[in-house]
Structure formats: structure tokens, C-alpha cells
Image 1: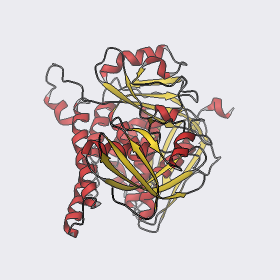
Image 2: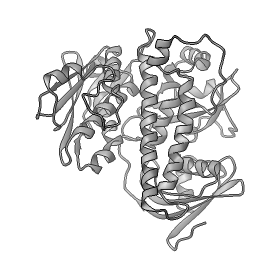
Image 3: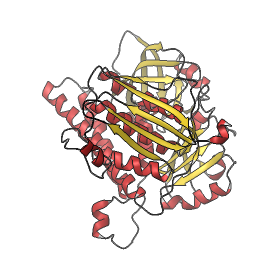
Image 4: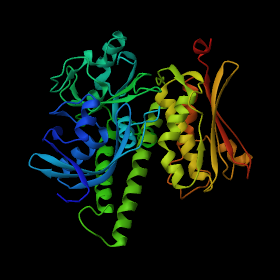
Length: 455
């Protein structure tokens, strides 16, 4: 293990990526989050690094952030495979104060889980089922059973692998838990994202189930040529994502020079590979979503949401990208609320696209504003930037499929705004733009207001 005089705590994991020994302060954080020794690693960021190090047989080192319900910590973590498990060394453990009211979790892990989810559900604060949507035909039966059992805990409908804890389980223990679905051979991984301000989960949870293995191909008629060109089969998407994700992970290992120093040109090549891999993952996701929303049977799952809260979450997720370009993002203030009716993850997807575009095309040192308001039965959120703006001709084409407005170097697919408008319309809303050359752009998402929440 690479040593350092500043190492503060050690831990060990086994071949199942469980924490079997830990010193303070990691042991205390693990216990406060509902963990046991031995037991599942509660912190998603640490669990991901340990799993990657064990599976690839690599020594990994990186800065991580972990949190309990009261405090956020940053630290330098070194993980090295040893025997069937790993040895973990942590240094520079520092407190960053109280966590923000909007808990985004580990962004990369959440993004990948949403890419590959076979089933998604909205849960209440007690992890009771509120709304269910399946994206994998294998989970249609589970989705029907869950829909019939709305109001019951989601864990009633699956079998947790290796579960020795008494119910109910703390959500941090269930985040990353392996489980089985009746009638299916493969294991599934659960991902739980807490919602709401204040205590994590006070506003409920988002549940995603991701298959641990690619389902075997089933015989079916070959799709028409037009379908092959215009869409990507949802069974193929996980097959593509998994090797691309591995390429990205390996490129990041090379770029970080964890195995020793490299010439600058090679670290540059690795960074280019990472960027290309991330672009390919985004393209796969866009094509998969395109096929879904162009299907006549597509229907989002409407729910009671808070547009101001979703906007704060989007700003938090993309805050680092904005700060790297010295762009200030002015999001709705904490306590500001604009109730609406829509599907939470689809609204977040739209806002991430709008805010990501604003960051990409705004000059360094500029500002972006997110304004939420409710009027006349409509709730709206506007993303306004100080970019170069759009001409009348460009405004007429901006929501067209594969339209990139002549840009050839931004890595985009030209599908983001088309998908965003289709999603808005599917939720009974609209997505519009106001702009002029040299005056920036204002994209406004409008949805039906949640009048019950405002009355």
C-alpha cells in the first residue's frame, strides 16, 4: 500500500465488498449512517471505488466526499486489492460543514443508474410505493405487482440478497443492495436517491433497479431498416454502456498516473479517450430516450413536484462545471417553492439539458439565472443566459431533431432540445425559447401547476 505520514484511518473489505474492519472516524460515520461491521459499505462513493479496485485488480486513489445526515466530509482515499478484498487507507479527513438541503449523492453513479435502470419508482418518506414505471420487459410483472400494492414498502416485492437485518432497513443500507426478482435468474442492484429538503428522504426517494448482467437475447423478428436507423433497442443499450464505461474507467486510471508517471502526451491521450467515451455514453442515452418518446405508447408518470427544488438540484449537479468556467448560476433560493405536476426525473432531465447548454454556450465570467414562478394555472421555470443568442431563423430550427445550428465542435448530438420539448409536451406542458442575437437566450419550461398544493 502506498504510505503517507498523513494517513489517519484504515479499513478492510472482503470479496463481497463488505466493510469488515474500520478505524475511526470512518467507523463512526459508517455507524451513524445505519451500517454494521461486518456489513455493506454505506457510502456510495467509497463502495464504487472499492468495487472497481477489486474487480480490475488495480490500486486506486482519489478524493471522495461522504456525508451523514448532519455533516459532509472530504478525504483522500487509497484502495489496494489484498487477498479476496481490499485494504483502504484514508488521509486528510476534513469536515465541510452541514450538507445542503438538496442531496444529489454521487452524480456519476446516479447518472449511470438512470442510464441502465430496468425499473424506476417514486417512493414516499417511509419507502412506500407511490408511482412505478418499468423500462425492461422482464420487469413488467414486478411493475404490475408494485402498482397493485401502492402504499406498501417496495422491499415487500423483492428478495434482498444476503439480507440479515431486521426490517425496516435504513435507506443507506438499501442503496446499492443486491436483490432478486421472482421468476428472473439475474441479480439486480437497487439505487435509492433521497428527495426533499432538510433530512435526506424527507420528501421521499427515487428508486432505480439495474440488472447486474445483460439479459440473454431472445429470438424476435428483425426490426425494420427505419427502426435500425432511427432508434437503438433498449436491450442493446446496456451492452454498449458497460464496455464504454470500462474504457472510461481505465482511461481515468491512466490519466491519473496511478501506476506511475507518464509523459504528458499520454495523459493527454487518456483524457481524450475519457471525453470521447463520455460523449458516446451521452449519445447512447439520447438515442435510447429518442426511441422511447417517439413510441406512441410512451406516457410519463405525473407526480407532485416542486419546480424550484428541481432547479436547485440541477444547479447543484452542474455547479462544478459552471465554476470551472467562472460562470455564476443563480438558482431559486431555499424556501422558494413552485408546486407543479410532472415526472420528477423527466423534469430534472430537461433542466439539466437546458442548464448544460447555457453553461456550454455562455462566455466565461457571465451569469445564468433560473427563475421559477406560477401564474394562471401554470408553473414555469426559465433558464436565461448571457450567451450569443439565437437569430429568428435559428429559433425556428432549435427544437428540430439532430439540429446543432451549425456547431461542429461541441460534442452534442443535436437531440437534447428535441427530446426536452417532447418530454414537456408528454407531461402536458410546453418548452419555448425567447432570444435575439447578442442578447442571450431564455428557455422556459411550463407545466400544469399543482393547485392542490397552493390552495
